[in-house]
Length: 115
Image (cartoon, rainbow, N blue to C red; front, side, top):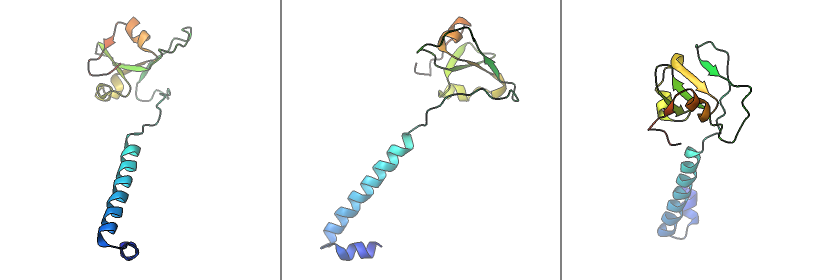
């Protein structure tokens, strides 16, 4: 395929410039696709792993309802996408529907998560 493209080019220099531009565009597009994250909405599942979900059905939903996770043995809450959340063993995770619920339960924000 490159031989056909090269034969269509008028000179070696033009072929090199077009090839480098094409590589640059493809690299840019692949880089952009690598950082696109799907929206994550945690869904409660059956409790096979011993995960504890804390629900407050009487609490109205608000715009500050960001789900967080804490450790049964810890004092800090983490965003679900935070690196600290991934270090908690699955059987020790306790999920809250919002930051306000975690604060009300006595937890404080983790220093390594950006809130």
